Image (cartoon, rainbow, N blue to C red; front, top):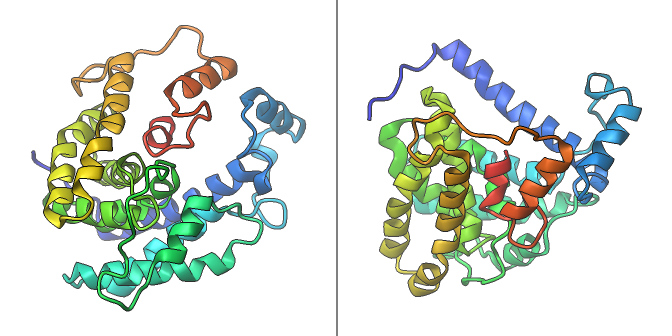
Length: 292
């Protein structure tokens, strides 16, 4: 595959800044101090937004629009990547990420961090050999890893950096969500960000993810940690995405997506619920990137 030409440095820097700022603003808007993140009714949210005067009248600022745990952990990931700089020793990077994740847990008041993320961060032991590694967890298929991985795609945007993107997204993801459904969401977020920078058409992204999943599995196998447990749970993410791409008619990476004729708020709620693991759309690692 040939990558498209990058923008000039100043334009790219502006877009990188905008990506980080807008991801935080979008998180604060969707979180609404916990009121909207945990509301399963799109109609309720849209009606309340209309009473506020619509999105154009919302001023996303404290105290009513704080960012959630997701942005705090996304910034923690980005901070570790910046501190690591241009180095090549990924073990040092992983140690920095683990340290950053543990530190950011002190800034979670009112941000509703997930129980799995909290428990996993407690297990991290930065400063020790492989202190970033935690055990496999059959309950760790949530969306937390996916929500904080965009900056990994910003750091490794080039085609030739795909091995690094896979390694870092998987390892940072399974520092809290050591389950394929969880950490492959991290891979999807990072990979799609790199595709956006490369200028790849959105209709190709899903097929691109499917094409790279075998490489992600090869990476997991090469690391030799909880390999059989990961392989036994691998197919859920893969099958969920295959079904989604088939439904949208974009499995080939070439066709235009197909949407229902009527696709309003209630219809979207039902679609999100049907893609979900437990009925809460977007709460897992596989469907959070789908909805985004």
